[in-house]
Length: 160
Image 1 (cartoon, one colour):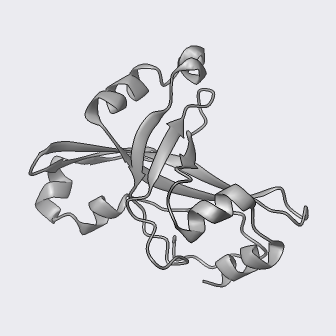
Image 2: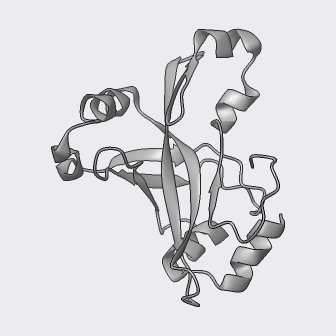
Image 3: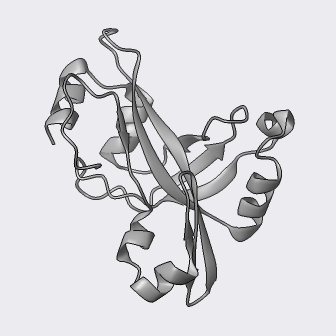
């Protein structure tokens, strides 16, 4: 995802921008804003909002506890406003989850994971939200989050 080779086994893969940002024109990107954990992008139906979150896959072999996709999700404008408002508030963990859709291309999955429904759960200030995939979707990523993956699968993901 980052294009850099690393030594050892990576347990976190990070996407630098939402797929919608990557697909946007230079003009749209100039009118938008891309930060480390948040993004806005103008569109034909208004401004679109994105935040970074973590899809955590438990690793069953216990060599490592988890594998993380640090990726982007699109959220409603009102949820983005609330997310920003509570960004440094300790009470943010008490807020109900936001609804969203994945907006990162994960080459390890076919069909693509783009558009999968998620519940976005706030964690303490300074930590990106947890992304819980809707289990009523038939997709390998959904199954991997629910059932966990093996260390062998982590190596496979690293090879891609």
